[in-house]
Length: 152
Image 1: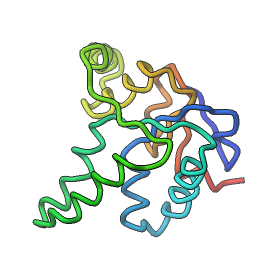
Image 2: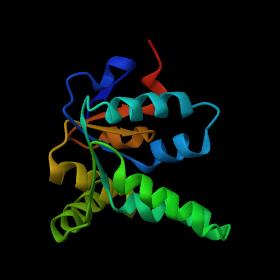
Image 3: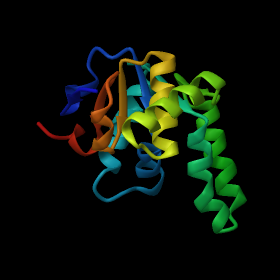
Image 4: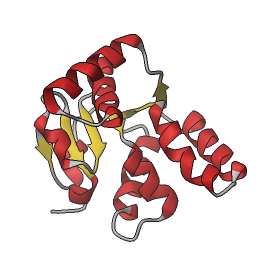
């Protein structure tokens, strides 16, 4: 997967898979990456591209609030993902699992990473927003790192 840096990294991408890290940075107000996450989500909200997330994002986002016994926050996160403009949550299908198994075997990726990348391939997005540079080892959509988004 090829790289893209700076605010223009998503230019021309009509469909983008959004990794869990972006949501975490946004929701937790991450000191270093919240601004970039917020800007990307604003572009999605304005309809500059169609956004996709694996339903795996729900699992990854809800763990912390549930560990803190904050069902109310977990419910807010789920509602946000279910109703965010121009965003579609994609189920983890058999074809995604088969693709993830192939990616794990070829690239020794963790399960969650393999599922996310297989989801990106399965839905044919133009780009993937993450903060995991290791994803660039895998061919497919261009990888936009949140850490590079605000760079010139």
